[in-house]
Image 1 (cartoon, rainbow, N blue to C red):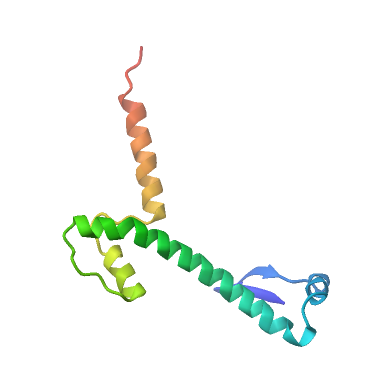
Image 2: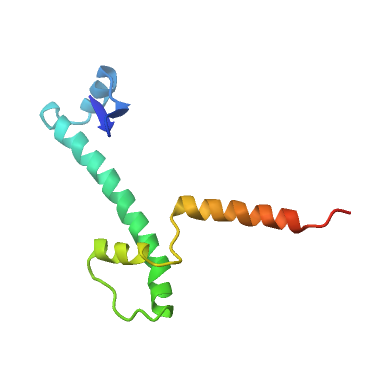
Length: 110
């Protein structure tokens, strides 16, 4: 059994690994159980990320004077992404690197 994302094999269950799992899971339920577990892991990751995004941005939106926010999760996320101060993880990391570089440059040599 192989798990692909965008045509890339990201994980493979060998026959031995499948047998180990089947020691605890009925063989006829095996495939459905694995699919359920993969879905659950991705859903949990999304939910945790969304919870952190929401916790960070709801107060910011309030201070920006936005009085009404969507109740739909996707719409709320899109509203946040459209904010001028929004930065994704990559952008925040780049910004932090630039800040550290500018601090180092401003320290005078002795």
